[in-house]
Length: 101
Image (cartoon, rainbow, N blue to C red):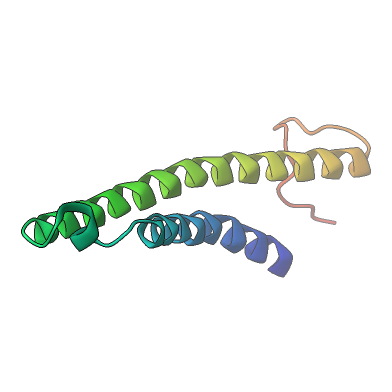
């Protein structure tokens, strides 16, 4: 049970961590706003950079959350198939949730 919970927590936190890292890398790669547009428009440039950083973080997190969901479903199906093979047959419901006996 603990390994199952740890696997799901890891899969759900991974997109968030990578999304934040992608936003940080985006901001750290850009030169300062003063050197980009000059001191007059530096404040507007700063707002645009923060807005772009948020869009990148959101997009990367969303894409990786979908990927993590697909991986989680695949892992659960694989585990259920292994359980069915170990039991020596299939069940009427198609998956084995609990074994009493």
